[in-house]
Image (cartoon, rainbow, N blue to C red; front, top):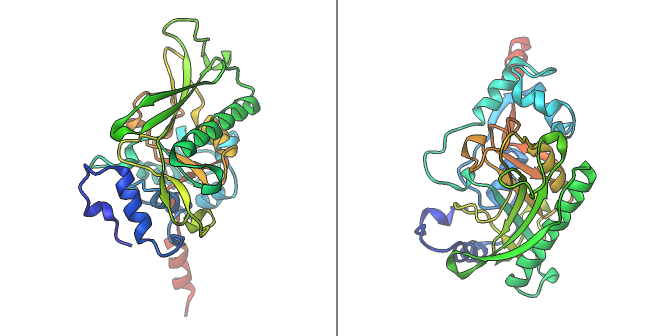
Length: 306
């Protein structure tokens, strides 16, 4: 399906664009088997400006068969070149993921995307509050499982563009091992904030998350990053953001995910562990925009063929 955003002026609201997309849909958006899970999720969620890069097939297999974020391999994988246990081409492949975005696109912003079943809320406004509460519970569960000290989750509502309201979840982090003091220490703290934009109605959810043929509240990605999950810090603190984000995603419903851009696009740098490439956090894992490069294997096969 041709993206309507190519023909609709950018000044139109995301709500109108979402309604147009939903109106033209004839069934759940299919999965493209030639694309990564990350790219399938991003395109279904309206996050543009992304593409897959090829990495060595053996490295791709290691990534997809495990969860690097939740074990000791992640730090090495994103800081060492080559990472222990990976080929010399692994770092190059990840480096290619840090592609340049020549235009302002959604891929530069933190995003929250979800397809909430309509039976869970009575209206878009109610769905927005329900989604805020779902994320708040996921944050609480993640911090508890990580055994990270934190203050109470604060809930608030702020006015936003197009008359919508953006719901905020904020919680203060202060585990000593990451140098995050309590918020009572003025100017030195770590905080996790969440923004949820009011959803539109969509007729289907995409096949990549199950493809339910029922109306849902669609929390769509946009070029401004109005929906987000974002950790920030000051001073010398260094939050292990990949581990935190993956754990939050673990406690979200299967119809929701969130996205973080390459580190250079982060409005506030958190730590050296911020990936230099785009990541989607879904079902407790960090999904990267990569597919296996099988070209070397194919050449070997051709040489062995009489």
